[in-house]
Amino acid sequence: MDIGTTLARNARRTPDKEAIYFKDHVYTYGRLNREVNKLAHGLIARGIEKGDKVALLMKNSDMFVIAFYAVMKVGGVAVPINFRLTQEEVRYILDDSDASAVFFDEEYAMLVNQAAADNQKVIFQVSVGEKVVGEQIKMAEILTKNDEDPPIEVDESDDAEILYTSGTTGRPKGALFDHHRVLHVAFSTAIMMKISPDDNLLHVAPLFHSAQLNLFMITGTFLGSTQVIHQEFDPRHVLQSIEKYKINIFFAVPTMYNYLLLVPDRESFDLTSVKRCGYGAAPMPVALLEKSIAMFKNDQFHNMCGLTEAGPGGIILPPEKHKDKIGAGGKAMLNTEVRVVSDTGDDVLPGQVGEFIIKSEMVMKGYYKNPEETRKALRDGWLYTGDLALIDEEGYITLVDRKKDMIISGGENVYSTEVEQILYKHPKLLDAAIIGLPDELWGEKVVAIVVPNEGEVVDEEEIKTFCGQHLAKYKVPTQIFVEKQIPRNASGKVLKYRIREALSNGKPVIN
Image 1 (cartoon, rainbow, N blue to C red):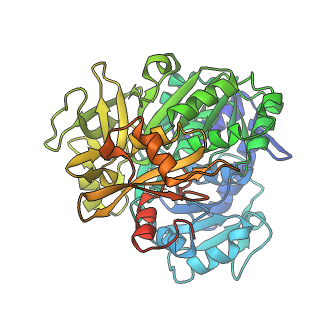
Image 2: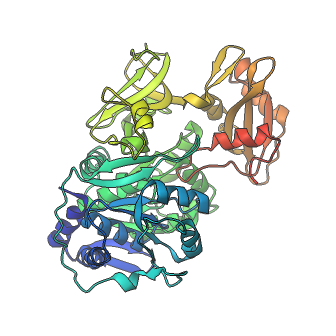
């Protein structure tokens, strides 16, 4: 089986069932498949061949789904790009991925034109709107009238995606996946979250990110579920859509749950249709999780803890374990093995910290055109994640930090997640992050960046006193920076290297 076939089969099985709602556009599975086929034949006519890379610089939309599945049906390799990236960053990914074509929202016409200006590999650039620059073309110009499935044989071993890592420590790397790996992500998600063809899914996190794309959009299409797509995250709009479309399955990153809780009249929305909620992509503070469970009046929350290179896969904490294991990442997902190991590769004892490693059919083939980094990450069949974790006596794993973010102060290890969990309990704080900065006496010092709730005022001593009531003295931040915002990537991960660079150079955290 391949990804494109899952859409075609549902078009034959349930042609009149609603597949996608986007703004005022409604697509049945039959119509969606026909629109995808028209574009697929257009790509073939323009010279796209099996194995060619096609970039997608697009916000969530019906056009994103159509373009993605058209690429799948011609045997191409989709390269979703974060639409928040700069021209230089987009240029890097277009070049690094060997993209032959790029689809983009019209607001990015100039950015794409300039990013691809010196790129000899990009054959054509396609605007999914009306605005074009230079020799760019509109999607309508390459659509054909042929709405039959294209005669391209696609095997599950053929490459399907290059997903660029979030770049929290520097240049992003392209994780390469074939159809087999991506479909195993869909199978495992459907089983572990009990998603069915009768469910309605809401997509609010960006589809260029592996969590929303592979865990939910491809899973929903594989099952033949109905999917509601939001172009951008708006908390009130989310609550309205849950009520209007009777959403059953909802996934969001922790920051999004935080903003849902800030909607003043959130209690007036009927959220009872939601059967299961997923959260992940970044650590979910226990205090925030407890408030979110209360808001949905539903304890069916799943912690989905993984990383792009694993599909994203890794560990999952099911709802029934949230009572006694809340805050933990969980145990291995279906068809996955996980371990926590020392620097010598041996399993650590319960209560000790080690590196979190994963073995699964969902793990990437490797980093595209980067054998050196691939050898570092994939060893003896295991993916070394670079995440530090604890494992308890029952085998439940809790991530505590990135290896590069662990702070060593006066010879003591300080794990930022532990300190951040305490800060999130402070009633005046909306957001928080912990980093380490050089210190002449202690080697490194613990530094906190905090964002107060609207209308609240906090000072350094207040935060230190609060932390001192819950943490050992060496873990208490010695310096506090109060900011209006903390820099995060699209998946909600804090860009700690940017914070360190800014503070080390005496610059603002957010420019």
